[in-house]
Each structure stands twice: as C-alpha cells, then as structure tokens.
Image 1 (tube, rainbow, N blue to C red):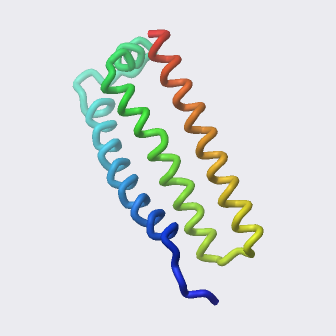
Image 2: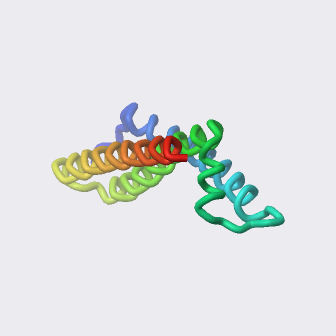
Length: 118
C-alpha cells in the first residue's frame, strides 16, 4: 500500500472545498430567488426574462462546471477509497473527465443558446 499523496489529490481536495462553497452559495441564492418570493410561480417566460440578464448567465456558467466537478470529483474520491487497480482507476478517472467536460460544453451551449433565443 502506497501511503504517498501527490499534488493531484491535494488540488482535488482543495477544489472540492471551493466548489462546495460555491454550491452552497448557489443553493441559497436559488432558494431566495425561486422559493422565497411572494409570487413564486415558475414558467417559461419568467425563466426567459431571468436569462436575459448577464448576471444570471454568469451564474449558470459558473454553476454548471462547479456542480459537475464537485459531483465527479466526489464520486472519484469514493471510488479511490476502494483502491481500484491502476488500469481501472485510470479508465474511470478519464471517463469522469470526458463526461464532465462534455456535459459542461453541452450546458454552456444550452445557456448561450437560451440567452440568444430570449
């Protein structure tokens, strides 16, 4: 058993905490805007109006990769705790990165397209 830790695990640990803080902030803001208003109806027109503002676009452009990184890095850490074989671990880590980047690009595309369509 190798007890050494590399810089990669330290960066993952730090980024997990940073994205967790971002996600906590986003969750509070989400509840404040969508659930704690006097008229909390949610419909397509309301969402479209909200997405016209640059602030909300930036919010979602940060939220998407932060949430994905937090989720995939957390899943990787759980898998890593079980010490998978080197090939299996490398394949899963690669899969997580490819999925994370692909879903982020897709999310960016949807956000920008939605904003242009508004």
